[in-house]
Image (cartoon, rainbow, N blue to C red):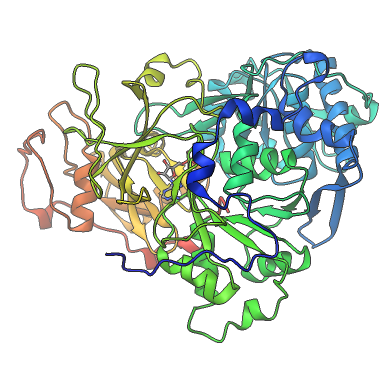
Length: 627
Ligand code: AMP
């Protein structure tokens, strides 16, 4: 029985949805047929994302259409047409070439949502180099780690970010040949080049070299439960999936004004903040500012946004300022009449948020599901179909999904190389996808072992637990591993634990996600101190500040509890699962692998001391958004 009533599809659409008959569209779909939607490089020289997203339109009657509408922090709007973008990206490709950056070389961005970011991304792709975006709110530790792991050759950033996060570690990054600084004025740190000066000197014609569909195009870091971050490799052919999924799951039509609130430092902001909408030739709204409810409504209204792709945390923050049962003053004071479709991704979308959209904004929110490795939306609620609030929807045409039986470790059970597909409605298991969609990652960079572990018996294993109902709708249950989703960001507990361990007072740490009504989860660390260090408020503040400095606000723990008796497996690993169960008052499950604690055992005297969020210097509301 569904707790929330199905929201019937809106048949009064002014614009007919791209997908009306789900079953028919799925039955008739093939990826090879979908490829013809893209043009390909002239003279059969292959497939390049930047050609499809920019040059193709610049050479058509869309040339003078606005590609990017950048809203500055001061609300000033700068428009970039497809023609402008073609010229700027050609210049940047020439800049790279002149600096000796070529095919396959990694170009990394550490930037806010400024126009130069878009030029860099698309110019890099034109040059057949590989673009790797980093989230500007990362601290120096995650930035340096990713620069190293990606084999970064060139970095584009600002003077301020460079000084704060890179300058001190530049000597440890010998492979990083060039740093380009974006920004006005004369602030040019030593050992860097001026983005603007190089662009001014560069030629604005560039012929894209032959590009094989399987050439590496994008590198996105994602987090695992242990080990270093994983660099998921994506190829130019992914554009086929970006095009198709934006057509079906975002219902893009050419005259749309589209706003994806995700930061391009993350995969959603890249695939759907840049690539997919430009493939469709629509106008993309780029907001340089940060989340603010009034600002967001102002952008939706002022820019006449018609399709809006956002995140559950952001919606929950909006819901706080505008309850469903209230007088809706805030959104009602803005003209949202251009808005015709809302979608959300990245974390579970609670049914209340779907219904809040309908009641307060006049449109229900369409949840969809995907992840860094899938490169594009895989499961969605569609504009032309009913919505089951709380469900992620159904697999896209061309996507085959299944629910697999789990083993003792919580992941899909693989017995003699085989998995078991659970057919019965409502069965819970690990979500798996049949490889073959064009945007599937082609492996984790330099990590064959973890790449191989992501596949079994012809399936890609997502690490997510789901249920599928009798009609084929998928419902998110949770993660099958320890990674944490906080405000839409995937955080690896190991990365946080490693930085905590760098602190001289910390003997050991275990990091979990603690449920939070707005951010989904917040990062909570359990810390055992070394002898001679006391579990004081000052120590806690020191650790919070230390991790925030090293990791940045999006990744650092928001709560720290001191605990001298962290639970361990017999092999000595901190049992995060148990920490989480104890934190949430859940059954502890199988603890047969738990190491016996032989020290004094009175729980109350263990020095267990949980930090209360209300005393936290940074409440979840201040969480930096992927939104
Ligand atoms: P990322 O690779 O950082 O984009 O994170 C992907 C993960 O986010 C997925 O594996 C899920 O755990 C979670 N996720 C994405 N979309 C949804 C959704 N619609 N509902 C629930 N969880 C989601």
